[in-house]
Image 1 (spheres, one colour):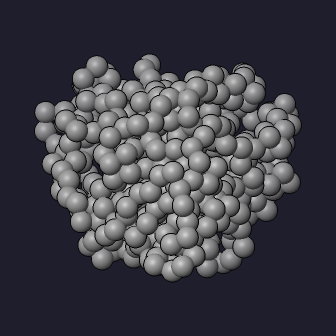
Image 2: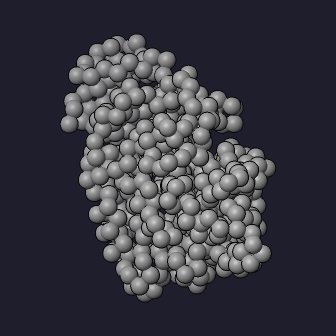
Image 3: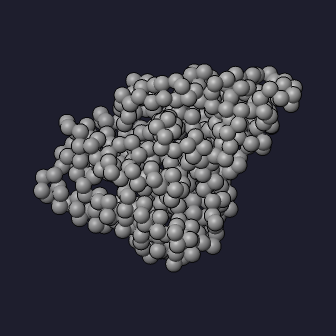
Length: 467
């Protein structure tokens, strides 16, 4: 463990404040903040001084939706916990919450243990787990209580993917009722998978096999319908609800209506829905396969409503749903049949920069950037103020961010273990310069100085975001 570090001369930005302050780090935590140039700040001595003049000093990003090494469609997500967490650090993210998977017929514990085994000793930043619940029965319901007690406090269910992860309304209601009692938060993949499967079958029968049909069959109305149904089931159960990867304006409208009614309903969107569209899915020569994910990319007009939802706080969190599959050897399993293209996109390294670009363009404020990328995800999933802010007592997960530097996103230069970038050639302003995780340098002036095994498992308390 290093001793003391002082970060001097930067603009400290949190969800609530912007101040020119020096930051003192001691034993892996933030020890103090003091206005730059004051006698208190001047008196600090430290083994390491980082000059942040002209830079932002921000909390490390908290990405609460990642899928490292996820088995899907006969293959595995191409980022391991080692490569994925290293890429996260390069992008200014210092905490991830990944999804452990329960297989049908198996216990939650078995799934959780398997994911612990994948991650342990391999992560360069801190990590936690949500639990994917694929099989709701009396034993599973009892296990939910035990998992909450040990810091796995959120459970994902799927209204999509019949035969794989799908839960019917009765199973969903039972899990929600249990979470109403134990304080867990149900996360919902809200798409009507039963109806979508019919449309997939019909499209393929008509010879509509290209990637763009993935977006056409997974209709926005079927996302909205499932979102509405999930909200009402949660209301019946008296449980809070978090809807993942919201992509359709009609789904945003359902969330907004529920929140206007005073319900504890929350929504997440992802950079791909804010910056990409069905134009990408329609790219020729099977290039559109790079952009196949579920929920799917939508026509451009949906972006306006997603940005509005982020400004009005009807959407609270931007996560990545990082689930990369290589174009060659994985995405091409679906040549001639879009339904066989592995669903998922890379993005963990791009999130903080893309959202900063939104600040540059005036879509959101600097503080809102930190709120949706750091503070709100940490609060939503029981990690605040240990994660998600810069305040005395918080973990020293700190990013020195250069708001003037420009970059061009590209597979040539990114660190994710995938052979394409969803944002190839995109110019952005703002770049991560230095990253500390619990006071240890992981990225030092654009050089990776971290190591696998530094990152530790982080148990979480229950949702801190409730009314």
